[in-house]
Amino acid sequence: MIISNNNAEHLAKSFVVSRKNFLFSNTPKGADSSELSMSIVETAKINKIDPFEYIHI
Image 1 (tube, rainbow, N blue to C red):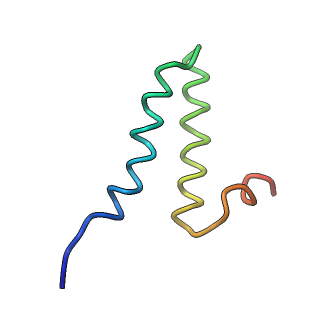
Image 2 (image 1 turned 120 degrees about the vertical axis):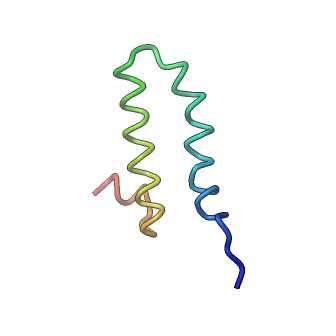
């Protein structure tokens, strides 16, 4: 059996890329909104739910 953390690293990658984008938010409230929406999208992906459909329900 091979133990791997590839799944965890793959999930963290999108947050690392987005973190740089949060630096360019005009206000702290804008950065909080970006972080919240990213969390919702990534949680939907983890649960095998289409994020677009989940948000538009």
